Image (cartoon, rainbow, N blue to C red):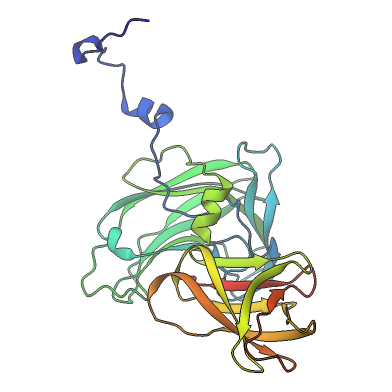
Length: 331
């Protein structure tokens, strides 16, 4: 086939339009929400916990306030393909203060005085009104935008919310200053509320949802939370004993964590030493923290329930199939 040159004069005036670029073009990485399609659930797929916390879907922070209910993974079947899961909030006892489902996006500096567009798919078990709002924390102070009210029905709909974020004065505080993207739920009522396909992008246009692979989304989540889960008797790591009661092991993360994480474990791992004995361990803790960011490796120290041999090289593994170790560096 002969090659020819396409000149600007050869392209019709209406051949390339903004809509065509948005709908058909490769727009690259633009969604600033992590786990917007609700594909990653490292912690759990269901929780009834109240108070601020990360309980189920990765990166989603919730508070049921003084109400009660369940936050869970909702299997969408063929309701809204290609989406597979949604985040379901089932309020079974009414709250007097608005429950919140939100995501905190790291580093407010890139959002000051910027126009952003928030888009999402939602439905409910009955007609309700859910507000969307941003809060740009700066100098550890709140700078909330005017909330937008969204009329949620029993059918899936896509909603958009475009706003220019505040331009507050003062100094950036890396510990606290992040952008909060909020769903503010109704009070004095019981209902089921579902969201999926949540997207935040710079600019005033809501583009089609950016679908990412599970592996890509998981790596993004693991900057903030990483769980090592294991089948029974499959080991997590090898290490050494620095005295007769302190087994120590090095953990390398699949992606750099935001800061030195806190460490917890459940159905705790055990240690198998060279002498052939099995010793239970509890209370994992970071052995040394540099206070730096973007952490790739840490040493984790445990407390042993028995005497260990110094300078031994134990293997750490799960005591039963539910065993895991958590590393948490959430905002």
